[in-house]
Structures are given as structure tokens and as C-alpha cells.
Image (cartoon, rainbow, N blue to C red; front, side, top):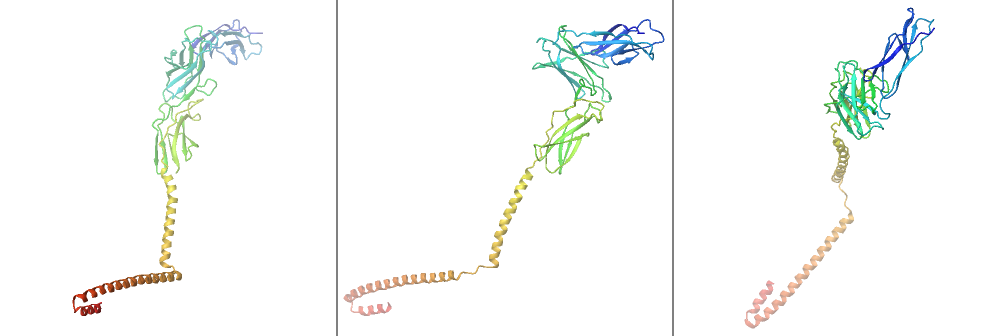
Amino acid sequence: QFLPPPSNLDYSFIQICTLNWTWNPPENVSSSCNLEYSSDIVIDESRFRVTDTFLNEEMRFKVRSECKYDNTSEPSRWVETSLLPKGIPGTAAVDLSCVWHNLEYMVCTWRPGENASSDTNYMLFYWFDGLKNRKKCSNYSMQQGIFECIFNLSFPKVTSTYPAISILIRDDSEEIRPVSVKYTFQLILPFSISVKPATPRRVTLSKINDEIYVEWSESDTFPENCLFYEVEYHSGDLDSAHIIKVIFHYLQLTDFFFSYVSCVDSHSNSNICCLKMKNCFLQFCFSGEKMDNTFYFVLIITIPLIVAVSTIILLVYLKRLKVLILPPIPDPREILKRMFGEQNEDAQVSKKLLGKLLFLNKFNSVALDKNLKGSTLRSPNSNLNVRQCMLVS
């Protein structure tokens, strides 16, 4: 015996991405039958189903009635209804992507549909559990054909769970097909939300002796121990980087040849964080103060130079010391050559002096002869004077 099917199957929108399906129980059912309803793979005793909807696609829903714990009756036939999308195909927004920045604000981007006109005025609405009504995003911008809208979205820091975010993009015109997406905070593809932690603030880099100390501020929005950090540093070779992961907001590095710390990145820690985020990323890199390696370079050049100069000075000193301790033996040939050379020079000097004396003597003799001849003519006593002069000479 087959049960009668449910009747008056209908649906209504609860919020942006949520449909409420309702129906009436079948009539003329035995009181011994404990009714339950099957819709797709969900079976329970409720007379309604709440499902997520995608307004740019056709949705089908079917339900049937069954008697629980009764093998004598067969389930009823399926009752089915469908929800057709509105608007012209190809006009719905495409490539919708939303990123939750630092658990403070949401940034959503999308492109217009290929069949949408250039004056299409897309509007973004959002809703999550806790809001009475959906809210409209008002901070719009468009660059290079890509729409962007930013709206505030934050929860208390002590929150242990975060509600799903429903996004609706549509136009006032009925010709533009709406699109809706429900983002969750669980690692369930394809609609798990991306969360981007903020850049670490107040990053300080100091060097004490041969240790580098890096410290940065903790997040004001993420719960404690919800983030881990990556510190990238270079040691000697700037082309090769080392990355260290830490869960604290500081790091102490010990290396004699550290060049500089280049990046401090923050990511979500999916193991211990209350959020299971699909894609946590940070593209900003903190540039630290570069350590000066000039001293080591000068030291490498100076040490060999000092050794070379010291060696030369030592060799010169040893040579002089050898001369003082062991004076060189003079060469006899040099001594003889020097002695005979001096004698030859003395002989030549003597010959020159002798020649000069002979010349002067001869000259004086001629002069005296002339004087004597003159004196003989003037005085009879001149002979005596001449003799005296000659004797004197």
C-alpha cells in the first residue's frame, strides 16, 4: 500500500541565500503511521526544509512521505517543484571573490557578466546570523572593469565561532540575473572564505653583540594563539633566504654573519586557531636595518696586508743584523786595486807640482838676469846686491 504524497509544496526566502521549503502532510493516513519526510538525502519528521540557494541557477526540490518503523506501507511518490533563475542569462556578476581583512572589513570583487550592458548598476547586499535585515554595501569602486565593494565586518575578540556570510549581487533591473553566495569559515570548498591578517605593526629590529632580536606587536583582532608568524632572513648570501615559523611575536637569532631580516609575515594557525581559514596570506615584507659588514671585509683585507708588511720589515732587519754580527770579508783584489790607484794619483800630482816648480824657477831666473843687467849699468855696488839676491834665492 502506497502512502499519499505531501501537498502544497512551496518555498519562501528567509534571507539572501536561504530558502524555506514547506508542505502539508498527506491526508487519510492511518494513525498508526509515524510520518516522516524524505527530501534528497535528508530524512526527519519536520514539515519544512531550509536550504541554501544560488539565484543564478535552477533549483529543484522534491519530498515524499514515509511511515517510520512500518514495513507494510510503501513511501509515497515524490512531489517536486523548482525555482527558476530570473533575468537574462549571462548578465549575472562573475568571478565573485571576498577576502576578510584582519577580521575587520570585507573586500569583495567581481566582474560584470558577458551579456550585461555597460551601464549595469550592480549592488551588493550581505547578511549573517545576528542581523535583522540584510545590509547594502555603499563603498563602491571600479577599476579596469572590475567592481569592488568594501564593508565593515567585525565580531568581539572573544568570539569562538563565526557565522556564515551571505552575499547577494543584483541590479534593480529585472533583466540582470542575480547571483548569491554563502561564505563559510570552514574548510569546505568551493565557498570557504579567505582571511588576510594585517601586516605586523611596530616591528623592531635590534642587534646585541652577535644576536639579532626581532619583535612585533600582537594582533588586536585575532584571538590569542590564533596566528603564527614567518620570519625570513638572509645570512651572508642575499639570494638564499631562511624562513622560521613561530607562534610568538618575537624571535631571537644568533649568527655571526647575519645580513638583515627582510620579512615578518603573519598567517592563521589552522591547528590551534578557532578559525579554519582556507587561505591566509600576507604580501607585505618588513625591511629591517641592514647590518654593516664593512668591518669584516676590511679585516679580511687588512690581516694579509699586515702579515706581508711585517715579513718584509723582518727580512730587512735580519739582513742588517747579519751585517753587524758577521761583517763581510774585504776582497784583496779590491784593496790592491784601491792602493795602487791612490799611488798613481799621488805620482801624477807630484809630477804636476814638480813641473810647476821648475817652471816658476826658470821664470824667476830669467827675471833676475834681466834685473842684474840693468843694475850693472846704474851702480858699481850692484854686484854685491845681486850676489846677495842670488844667495837669498
